[in-house]
Image (cartoon, rainbow, N blue to C red; front, side):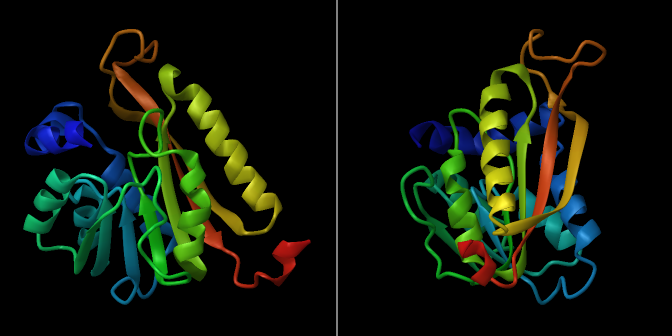
Amino acid sequence: MSFYDSWSELYEQDVMFLDYRAPLLAAESLAAVMHEDRDQALVLDVACGTGLVAVQLQRLGFCNFHGVDGSAGMLELARSKTVYQTLQKSMLDTDSLPAHSDSYDVVVIVGALSEGQVPHSILPELLRVTKPGGFICMTTRSNTSNQLYKEQLQTVIEEMEQKRLWERVRVQEIEHWEKATSVHEAEQTTEYISGIIYVHRKSKSQDKNDN
């Protein structure tokens, strides 16, 4: 986490340079399927970083945010935005999420599900803390160096669908996700890499999930 602590002061400047669009696109994708009661929904922002996702969700009418991240430096900047009601430090690759089961109307994890960051083993935790009928919004990159992780992530997502733990609401492929950091990662016709947004809804009844 020392890398993220030291990067925190320059993080937003760097992602702006990369035209990093994931927070905006994920917020809009979630809002497209959640039309009502946004101002009442309690949102858990997992790997919240400096708060970019919560700022975009607030713009779209969401008001109640809890954030969790492994970097104290990132959390300090998120706190300065005065968007979150609570912020907690947690190592997302080893710890359970610091929340009771069935607590949140919405759980988001944007920009952190990728190789070398948060492992896909966190998905059951995202589901656990979401209320029955609540929404889970996740993103990952589709560039070459993240392909294996993306395939593994999608396998876990589909297994959880087959077990009826959640249902797929929206999957959105994005061509211009962010600018590539190397020519080898860029798409053939653009300087950007692609990404994907998944929106799922937790099953309202868990009885059928034991089958």
